[in-house]
Image (cartoon, rainbow, N blue to C red; front, side):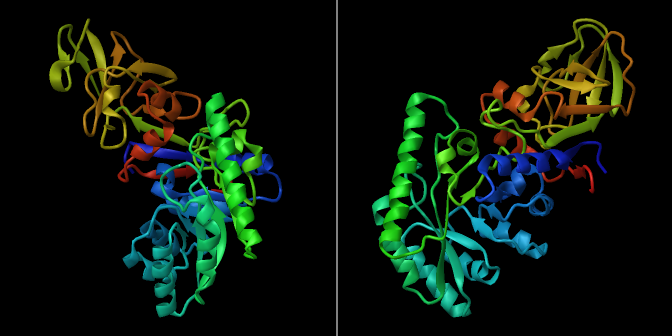
Length: 370
């Protein structure tokens, strides 16, 4: 195994799922998004751990991600969040994935694919209440729901929307979210008034789970919260799941005035020891952290010296050091700098940091019962 590896703390993941269940109450189902390789945590493994912890649904971005789960023997309901292509529909039908539908044209395409396979396809109707991405307008929901039911091989399994600023406590954003939820309730009510059962009604993402109890409906879909990053840590605390570790592969003595790494952006201010860590931006360490980040070795934080390379980075151990070759090095994780800390430093979001961890980094799952 490579020195650089992602350690996944499954006990923390389970605790986050239990916290989501407690917050949502006993009745709403839990849908665990495992898109983007489970936010970099490993889709197949995290799906299994999620289901073992009591989640009822999984969600991915596209048919390829759904097919990966089915090939691994995962039979739970899997939602597709992104708009599928018509040519993906035969595989979606075959693998019993659940696409979101936003318009009549795609309903027709889905119905044709299901009829050709002589296999019923469950779909969820997406309503756009203000995200501006996918979904029909709220007033068009009853007509589209009726269209779905008009096809022998289609079933309406649910109705959903997506909240765009549910993680914000700004008064204007709170009002916007309340407006989205109001529109969504009206759309669902209009479907029922048309004599159509909407199925599973769902809207709540991580922000809504923390801040908007009126969004829980029949199912909640917390994503980033389950991986350890809450939109409001005070109201709904989360435990980070991923830890990125490496090791000290080499130590050398740099003399005062010597340059380290590309571009000569770091010059030794004194005679000092430099450790080389076999982890770089191809592993997921953002290059903008060059000369502006620390890595923990033997319980102490050591500053990165010079530009982060594709496969390696260097840290300044100082003029005297107890660090030895092969010592473990923590780049981020629980109890140290987290993905949220890095994200704040780079003016981005934890999702961005977690999803950067590349496929070449082995995932190691730890915890009770692993």
